[in-house]
Image 1 (cartoon, helix red, strand yellow):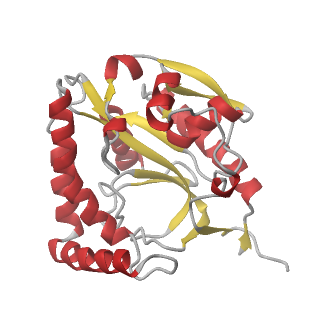
Image 2 (image 1 turned 120 degrees about the vertical axis):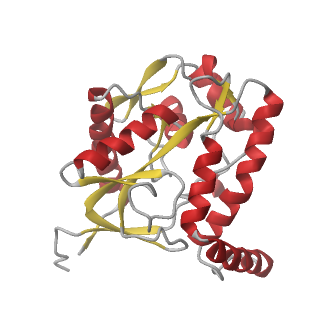
Length: 277
């Protein structure tokens, strides 16, 4: 198989996201840029130069509808949706939109199923109508997120401290005894217990927690703005400046050069091409 370099990977990611965005629009779903993808759109009009992925948001109702679209219709050409709801072997707590013509090998993780080049899709969940309720709800989710992370992360990784590796290995034993399916079921029941539709506060809590992830729905997701990203345009939360300030502080300031590196360790291959070298 031919290895895919960083530049080609980014080009493929943009095409994938355009396809996903069109699919969402056709089904009345609003797909938003999030995280480093939104930061890249605002600061660089595209990818952060050292970034290597795309992160998107869907409200929990839209997220569940997207899963049902793939459950009922299967793959869309070469693209498929990975989620635990569709594949019990898949371990992440959020979905990945996959290019099945590619094979992705993660250095320090194990998704539980074969991976390809992906766009991350994170649900935005309800957090209730009081800030205290939102924080308390996040803490309840954290124990399940932490246990599930121990299943995803390979123990005894290089360049990781013994204490951290030991802690992950211990949590992994507990998580395996508990069972991935039970973990996901408990977490999904919990995150849906405060409905998105009736919540004043919302946030992306299925993967990580923290106060910066608590947002007023009316400020972010009652509408959207459209921003340039590479050679196309994608939607963003309607108050991207407030969003990015909340997440990153002075987001227009570049980080030190030593931190301008890709954070994901993986190799990507084209399964349809033979390597001639």
